[in-house]
Amino acid sequence: MTNSLRNSLMSGRFDRIAIALSGLCVAHCFATAVILGLLASAGGIFESPIFHEAGLVLAILLGAISLGHGAMVHKFMMPAAIGSLGLGIMAGALTMDHGMQESFYTLLGVGILALGHDLNHRAGR
Image (cartoon, rainbow, N blue to C red; front, side, top):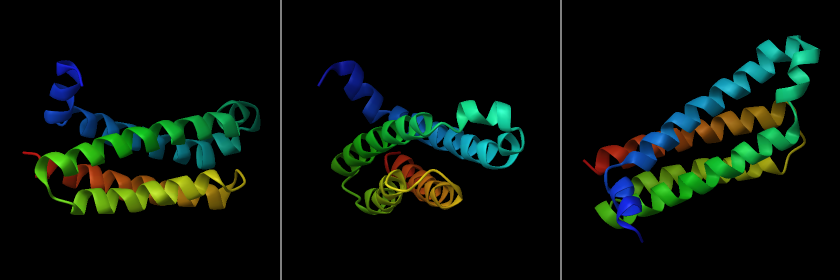
C-alpha cells in the first residue's frame, strides 16, 4: 500500500469522500424521482439505469474499502456492521427494476451506509 493511500485511509479522507458521495446519491435520487421525473425530457438523461448502476457500484466499492480499513485500524466493528447493512441493501437495489421501489431501497441503503461512515469516522479520531 502506498504512503498516499495509507495517509488517506488513516486521516479518514475516504470516509469523508464516501459521506459526500452518499449525500450526492441522495440528492441524485431525490432529484430524479421528484423534480426530474416531472420533466420527462430532462429526466431521461439522469434516469438512465446505467447511470444509476455505475454510481451504486462505485459507492459500494468505496464504502467497503473505507469501512473495512476503519475496522482494521480502530478495531471497532459496529461502524462496519452498520455500513455493511447499508451496502447489502444498496446491492439488493441493483437487482431491482429501475423505479420507485428501487429508489426507496437505494435511499434506505445510502442512509444506513452514511451512518456507518459517520461512526467509522468518529471511531478513528
